[in-house]
Length: 126
Length: 149
Ligand SMILES: Nc1ncnc2c1ncn2[C@@H]1O[C@H](COP(=O)(O)OP(=O)(O)OP(=O)(O)O)[C@@H](O)[C@H]1O
Ligand SMILES: [Mg+2]
Image 1: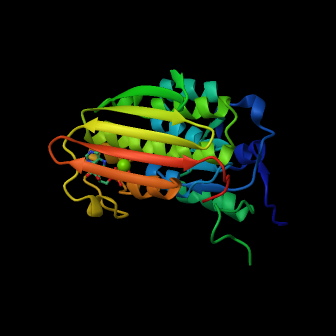
Image 2: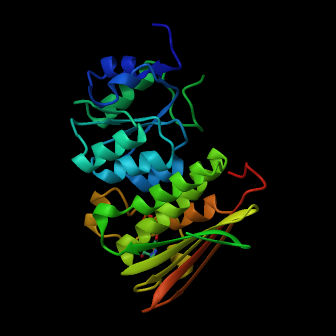
Image 3: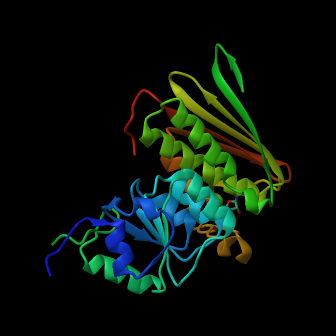
């Protein structure tokens, strides 16, 4: 399997069999790297603009944190979905939201083995 | 909003324990900075510092006033809260030190990363506290150099 380094949101949606909560019109967005955590202060410390945020935290803070760091989109793991406040704020800020049934480890593994790198530092490059 | 020879000034009030609105003021600040055309890397650094400081007020203090001052040279955020204050600032500044409750952790906070991360994103950071009264935080971010982080 040839390794890719970028994925579109549509490819990510298909790979993760995810539901699109917001952003059906943004599925051609290109994602270059991802990072996963349920801890927002970790995301604020290690996230980089453009990140695809994977999280199991489904309150409005997940969306607010994503907006603060200029994340490109959020994938909620374990079938989580944000509350209505979160959904409204994501719509306002134009942040696509996806939800997958896979757990965090599997979600990361699927994306990583497809060639999508992690955020900065230690990368998948050999 | 006020404007004088010292630049533009915005004043916000943060309510302690108001978790449902926590982060809205920093979201607002980010939008203001974007609107006036501040470089995006500076906008993100300022927004992160503001958000961590706002979350701390919501989690630990009763209320605070946040002032954002914008001059051609720098952005300045000042937070003054009424609350329990911090007994040992050196300890509070350590990565990983946290007195967050389970409720706060469930909300995605309480890793003990907030204050160190504010310092990391600021060009100048000052914190002072009077136990039993409150905490003051001063964050300065320079506009003349776009890259620092
Ligand atoms: N405004 C404040 N008033 C009183 N205590 C504070 C205030 N800000 C921080 N503290 C104390 O300092 C500790 C460390 O703060 P810091 O922001 O670094 O981490 P945290 O808030 O516990 O977790 P995180 O920021 O990673 O979500 C807090 O747990 C709290 O005890
Ligand atoms: Mg904090």
